Length: 106
Image (cartoon, rainbow, N blue to C red; front, side):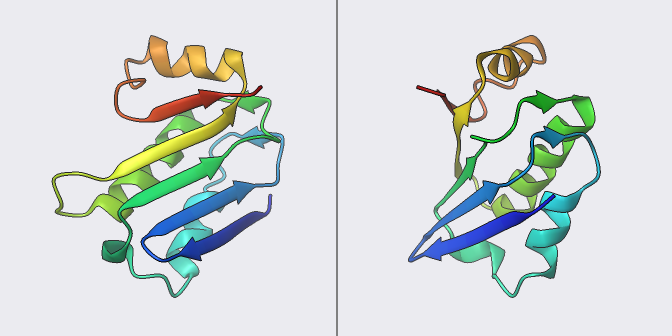
């Protein structure tokens, strides 16, 4: 899996170039191994255009990324964009749809 990190001022875009997020922790490890300071970003956006499969371990990985960047702050805006409808349903089922701003694929 490949993940592109694109920082712009206080916004960070992560582009996932894989069809699956299934707990291999590639997204989180890419973030941790970068030289990006977690406290400087007001918003994080993860582009899931290529992703067609996400399991509970993948959800846990997205939560880990969120927690890493949120740290001790009260708020951090996290946007999941280009989300497949079936994946968006998973966030509803596990009652996390209110934590992230979710934008479906057009």
